[in-house]
Length: 212
Length: 143
Image 1 (cartoon, rainbow over the protein chains, first blue to last red):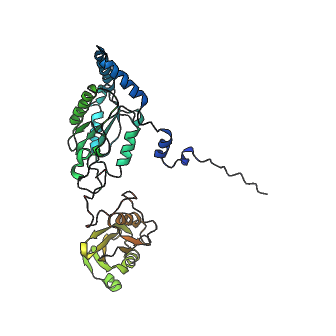
Image 2: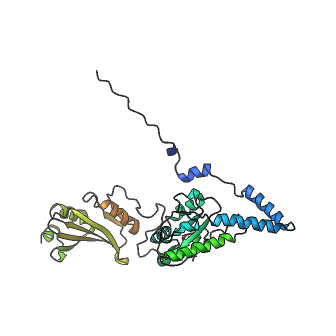
Image 3: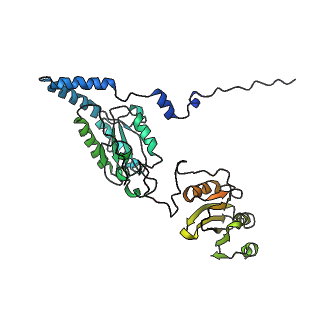
């Protein structure tokens, strides 16, 4: 009589019960709209600022925090098109953004900066928004190249977002098609300058949805 | 000459780069003939042209790599017509080409096993390579 070995039953992977990463985030990552700690911090800073002589303290604290922020801006590796080649050249040894404290990081959870390098298609835009939402505050975005700035040569195509600022708020626009590494480096230095002059955390500009 | 005897359609073009136009009803028959009799086993591409009020034209290029013969086959669907016979039963590689054709031109290939959009999102409206597609239609918030 033949004895059959039992067929091993493989349990389903845990993540299969979630339809989508987005759904998982909806249940596990929901953040209150107004972050109570930062608003508390802001009101304390505001009170200190109006206290006689307190502005010196808040200004010093702000400039110290901003110095710390601007000195370790980690861009998330997000290459979309040919601009990404120039971005890689900027990250590489000849231009070496690591001397500015920038480490290209392959995870949005640990990054502060998104360099949108290339054409954003309508199919890609929700994914771009999702990656941007996954980055922790405070965060910045650099729009690199004509396509990300305004749609560029593909502006009148059927599938291109006419400027990434319709999807996410953008701090620095770098022109060029594609911008050479010197241009991008200039844009990153401008961004560092902007970060140094940030007043407080918190209120960010909203994206500007517009139609022609 | 063989093509004309078999299908009643003259073959134009050069000696080794033939062009044949057939009615839409003979589309799959022509492909089967090209593959079995002419030995054109390689499907190079399948695409379509929008001739506005004259209707759509589907074209494909099949090649006999052994004898260095290429054959361009065309068919006119007629004005207002968007159905065409599918070539997947003859050439397996026509699958994605016909899906792209459906995506861009809205041609329904009868007999295709899985006719979905291939490049654009599934919820996209319209077929962008048609001449009647308005490119600057607002698509808020992106366009």
